[in-house]
Length: 193
Image 1 (spheres, rainbow, N blue to C red):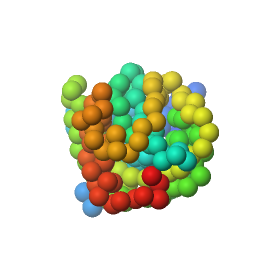
Image 2: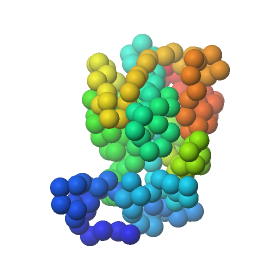
Image 3: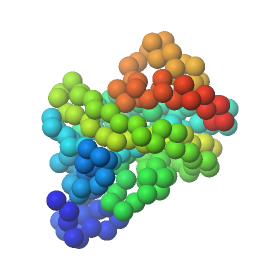
Image 4: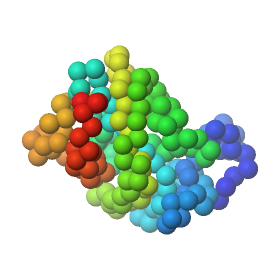
């Protein structure tokens, strides 16, 4: 599945169309190849590498985003600040910084991996499956959020207590965020809040 004409995780063999690649993983968490992102997510999604990031402002509020409606997985769902996939050969921290810049047009001042071994599998209402080893990061940002509408349709800053008590929120959150938040809360990472 690996394509030799890959530059920065992008397949350049298809002319003008740039194809994003994701890193496929074996059950032991080690890379076993790559595949085009647009072909990976389906009803039998293979295990692959991803990340989740929760961004905090100087007042300790956390940024939630609502996924654009055309996203293949969990469209229109509220979730953590930013999710993505490291490109082949790209470090996960570099991928987090890249995707935050691309999706939210923000730079991260501080970044810390807080759940390095998080793994989940979730099935959307349409049957599309997420199946990821997904390290979770906390980051601190400053400046206005200017989301790319192709990625994020809405965003809101909330206090951690509001996020923790998800039942009080007027919307449902993604299954990965629902699984991550209690784990993150148990770590008592007050430096970011």
